[in-house]
Every structure is written in structure tokens, then in C-alpha cells.
Amino acid sequence: MAVSYQESPAGIAEMLRAPWLVEALRKVAEKGKERAEAITPVDTGRMKASWVVTGGVVDGKARARLANTARNPQTGFPYPLALERGTRYIVRRRILGRAIDSMKI
Image 1: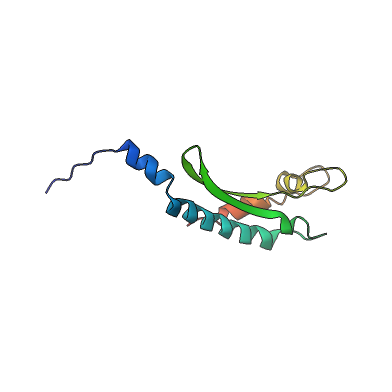
Image 2: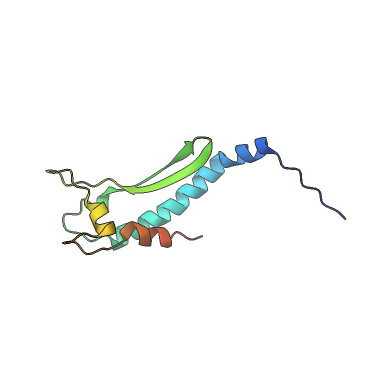
């Protein structure tokens, strides 16, 4: 018995923006958010409370995004970036990177 495959660009495009795919990606990002919240150091609690998951269709493709929106209120300094990469005065913690590593299905 032979199987024939015929690619359907319209079908693939429809699948890439399907609601079930958006929801599946959002669930994976939520798993990463839980991990990020668990390993975020707590000084004021602002950074731990600032993990955000967004999802939807962007440019015809399902997307989910995990981000941290925390900033220093006085200066606007993005300290999640400083903890992710490290600075001369702040030890590199790689919080988002480790959360992404835990998002494997």
C-alpha cells in the first residue's frame, strides 16, 4: 500500500494559527512562568509578581510569550535583564533561561 503526500500551504497556514495551537503554546509558557516564579530571588517581590504570559496569533502564526515587566520605579532600570545577564555588581542568575529550559514538553 502506497501513501501519497500532497502539501497544502493553505492547510499548513490554517494549522499554524489554530486556537488549539495557541492554547498549547500558552500552557507550555505557563509552565515556564511557574518555574521562573519559583527561582526568582525576592527582595521587594516586584520582580516575582511581574512574570507575564501572553499568547495569540501574530503574523499568521500562533505565539506565546513569557516576559518579566519589572523595572526600578525611580530609574526605570530593567533589573530582570541584569539578573539574566549579570553585571559587574550583580551575579548572573539566568532566571528566564532556566525557566525556558524547564519548558520542554
